[in-house]
Image (cartoon, rainbow, N blue to C red; front, side, top):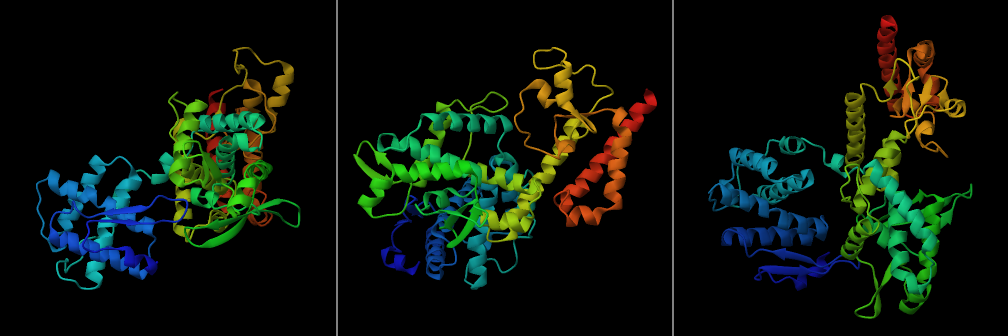
Length: 475
């Protein structure tokens, strides 16, 4: 990172630092800072962090602009400080509650307090003048700010996901991997790859033409290189991803030969009449246009608001829900530590709790299934009833719609379409007794997925049995 230092003029109030080829340049602004002491000090801290090279330019850039909220807080409350030494524990506490009241996004709130802590901790570490002698952060700031977990708002609505899958399938049938449709192929392939893998946008734009491989079982593997942490990993992918990579490789073959590159995400710029590597800011604009073009709407009928990173959080949560261990999810998603992975586990628990509150149980307990009707309000015939019958209840999905393949096999207890009645009480009791009697075998043979699944299934069965017993007593 130190090769950038000659380009920095410490006297200037605006620094522009070039990024890699898939990001815009990073702009650092210092002219708006309250006084010369803050201007000189924050410049010095930023330059020293660039020299050390411990943090990425993107992180330092976020710290630079996220500190603006702190100055707004001081201005709104008429507070004047000459140096960071004037910052007290009480002032930090006031800033935390200012963030809760004025900044809607949990991630933005978190970043604002983190940026302030970054600058103050740096000065304290090196014992500079103008910094607090005593500790002003008590360690509870982030917990207070995360009253609503950041990732909750980043999970994709089921209706949105179904619309995306439908639109991608429709779009694929009309796309041919030739240069006249290059930008169409690029966006379709990019969304397809990230939707099915959850890799970062920067990782997708960094994919090479030889990224697809096969394992010993002839399954598809994709090599992912991460610009974020300079690492690489191989992840299993499905056929949709393999087809998308094949299409874009064919579409960009001539371009890659001309530009002597193996990067596959190139697009055509009509105004400049040239081909360029797709950058993140352009890819994000294209995603917004895609949502409008295919009229992707959420369950409330509003136009969907979606980022590429939403797919990452959605897949991370699904992987844990489907029994993959946190360590496997960490490796799959390329997390540097377990901290990020643990957040997905928290979301999973929150989602589960939400379903309990909404339905009384994750599935549905009814006294009888005689009143079940299809989507047109008609009683299902015997054939449909037979399709819906389960050993411990009924699945409402084939009654209401055509089912080619259930996405949640062996997970009926946790599916909102699952309906059970008191006539299956003994089946559920037997199920619970078998789990309690032989937990170790369930775990060792992966019959129930993870330990988490086993625990939640046991709780679910206990809840079903208790409630059914009440219903049966009233019968």
